[in-house]
Amino acid sequence: MFDILVAGEINADLILSGNVKPEFDQVEKIVNSTTLTIGSSSAIFACGAARLGLRVAFIGVCGDDVFGHFMLDEMQKRNVDVSNVIIRSGGQTGLSVILNQEVDRAILTHLGLIADLQASDISDSLLSQSRHLHVASYFLQTKLQPDLPDLFQRAGSLGLTTSLDTNYDPSEKWLGFDKLLSVTDVFLPNKTEALSISKADNIEVAARQLTNKSELVAIKLGADGALACRDKEIIRSESISVNVVDTVGAGDSFDAGFIYGYLNDWPLEKSLRLACMCGALSTQKAGGTDGQPTLEEAMKYVS
Ligand SMILES: Nc1ncnc2c1ncn2[C@@H]1O[C@H](COP(=O)(O)OP(=O)(O)OP(=O)(O)O)[C@@H](O)[C@H]1O
Ligand SMILES: [Mg+2]
Image (tube, rainbow, N blue to C red; front, top):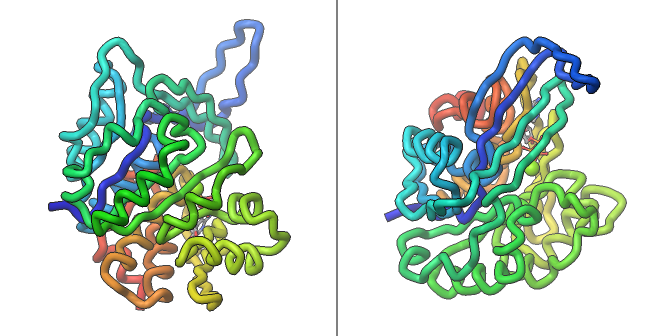
């Protein structure tokens, strides 16, 4: 029924742009623009994959509140099936306020129900409806974390492949990966995350070390594109030069492109190039989802 099940966190992003550095002592500053948009790595990935034409289902937890319904509506509009999302009355949906200043940003997040999804919420019958399971924001999904290796193993035994984008570890400890990576088919860190997790001091060593555990690793390098590693072979892809509005969700859009190629058995080089294009094109609009390309739009840059 579905190509991908995303087991993820749900939060909305409120993005303020312009002269956004707050001043205390009750100073009121006027900012240039505000956008309320789909936040959370997992939801942005789900929308990116659906935009490319994959059939995507999402399971996560949100509140019965304005931000929860906003997220469900926006995901549904983008063809993500949200019928398995758990709506918890009495809880609050996660919210991030993003203060966006040219290429840099500061983020204030209220976690709310972000971490509430548990492996026991994800039944075998739900898993069996998909051929791939993706998890992002590993470090934020604290209730899912301890059981994630078992969940990936369960998914594998039901015939699903698995992918993981940890994103940043707020505790900066980067612990607890060996078992998880050994049941992860595709690992999708960025450069900082790959170096921190592998404890390597250069990116190629990190890539090779990580593929001792996960079969396939793609590492995002921002404007420099990305590299992928399988069977010790390293492949690189450049990005393209784009007019960046903001880079929110570039990594998640990249992941969607890479998994598109993976699920279609594309050569690694082509998957990596599509992933880089999905990341690059996503930066041209505010927020994570509005700039995500269709397959046709992205393929203009993939030979
Ligand atoms: N400034 C940029 N110019 C061109 N391409 C970019 C730029 N920023 C990101 N990309 C593209 O998007 C991909 C993913 O972006 P990035 O490396 O920032 O991921 P990330 O660090 O995981 O991001 P996120 O903050 O979403 O977690 C890159 O590999 C690249 O192809
Ligand atoms: Mg990332």
